[in-house]
Each structure stands twice: as structure tokens, then as C-alpha cells.
Length: 224
Image 1 (tube, one colour):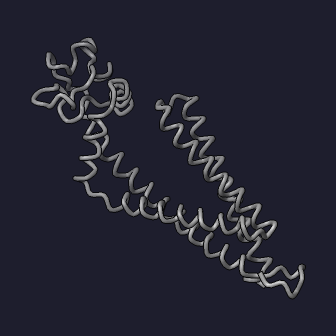
Image 2 (image 1 turned 180 degrees about the horizontal axis):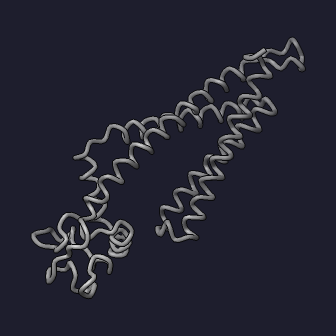
């Protein structure tokens, strides 16, 4: 009968197996991205791997607790999963609710804090030049940028292109290129995060239900 002890146990085990697969996917994607030079920032790789390891730890905790019907492990699993649900649900809602003006502010601050190496990589990847002014004119110092990539300067050297001495007509600004990518990325991230947050809430509800059920193979007088 679905909803009984065995059904709840199998459902909880299946849910945590899915979390294990997702954790290995996160770790694998981060490793592949770094190896293939798709992700150039070590901090980004580190955060992705850390999320994968954390999810793997939570899934293993849930698997052991579900298989053994261990009350203490299930309690800590339920607590950690509920905290993760609150954080992920809040972040997902924030991603979906952010306005275009707020996105521009985030992009401005990110560009201002980025090193020349990161700016060079962004210009090359997105085929863009500068943040909002390709020639570095009438800009605050924090929005200045290194020379534009070669594909933006087919008739001049990279040292002179887009640095005030020559106009760069081959590329648009990085803000124009990044705003659409950031907007779609936030929508996708928010949607996926919202979906997984509800699976975590389902996991919390299922764990509470499973903890309060008694094993029919055990002592019939031992209520858990």
C-alpha cells in the first residue's frame, strides 16, 4: 500500500539517489569546464564543486538514514534539507524577481570589481568591447577596460583599438551582450532552483512521515 512504511522508505531512497546523481553531475561539469577551459575562474569551479560535495553529503546522510530507519540521522537530514530549502527558495525567488535596472547595477559592480584578465576573457568570449563605452571616453576609471579582442579590430593593433585613439566598429559593448545572457541565465536558474526547492520540501515532508512510522518487521509494540 502506497503511503505505508515500505513506500515511504523507497520514495526517500529514490529521492536521495537523484540527489547523488545531480551532485556527481555538478562535480563533473565543473571539472570538465575547467579542463576544457570553458570555466577560467578557479573560484567559480571551487563553488560548483563545493555545492556538489555538500549535496552528495546530504544525499548520503539521507540514504543511510532511510535504509536503517535511523531516527537521529533522519532528524539531522530533515533539518539540513529544510534549511537548504529556505535558502534555495529565497534565492530562486530573488532571481525571478530581479528587475532590468537591478541587473544593470549588478553588471556595473561586477565589471568594476573585475580584473583586466576577467574583462579580457569576457570581451573575447562575448565578442564585445568595453562595458558601455567602447572608446573609454567620459567614463569613470572603474569602467575602463583592456584592449579589445582582435576580432573587433581587424585593421589595427589590439593596443590601439578601443583605447581612445581609434573607434571599434566591429563589436558592440559588453553590456549589450551580457544583459540578455544574464537575464536568460537568471530566469533559468530561478526556475530550476524553484523546482529543486520544492523537491527538498517534499523530502522534508517525506522524512517527517517516515520517521513517525513503525517498521512492520520490528517489534509491533515499539512505536517510533
